[in-house]
Image (cartoon, rainbow, N blue to C red):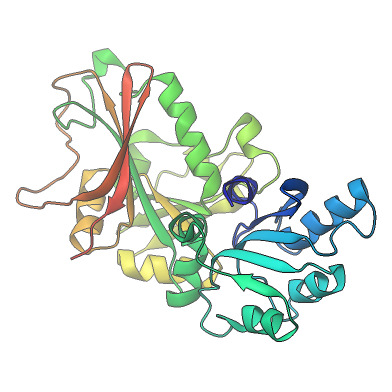
Length: 332
């Protein structure tokens, strides 16, 4: 299942609003086929894995084999035929599943169909990891809203800006490259009007991170529609991917994004909007880049005193001389 999860992770950022899914076919302890859901509207992971096994080992290779898949196989016709049909036609004897489909309309249906046809089914293998892989999809399919990742960079004592003489960037170049890997996973990047005016950000994917997927939506949430029209979000090659949400609350903005199929949002705002989002319990995940600096400008991570947010099971990663802290935000 670890190998199936690694296959599925390849689809983060390219399958939305479908979930990323990975699959491997195993026979006599050997992986004979691999696959992952590459893009929405294209074949699912199970069909890719089964096809890979048959191409490399012959048309009968899958008979009696075991299929490991990170998400319950679909059993209904959508943009592609149901994967349960392909599994039954292949002669697979056993299916091992990590996560059950979170869609209430489909949950368990594919598993029941396979069992009724005589296929042995095992569920819940590395379930935590499987659910983490589809967390964006699960949030959207069950609530209509996207999953929110808040990202910021700060000095060790919590400043998010520097004096002008020290330049714009708090984080190092490697950390900013790491941000690209997280942006690639997300359908939209959201900033507040203040951040937009001050920083004139591009909010784009660059180089290899932009390959194989559209640029994320670039969303500006503002109380004042009088935004600088010379800023690059209005004038660059991706200006059609810019959305202005004027006069909306943050929950209303998230609802609108959910309505157009946005499953994941990276919040790259300043302290005021981040404080508001945390205070309303809207942030699901936090990524914080800490630089080896003390002091800075007048802006801080949180704009008010007294607000406390706790990260569950935080992960720590050194990126050059920066430290990346990542964790789920504990809900009340």
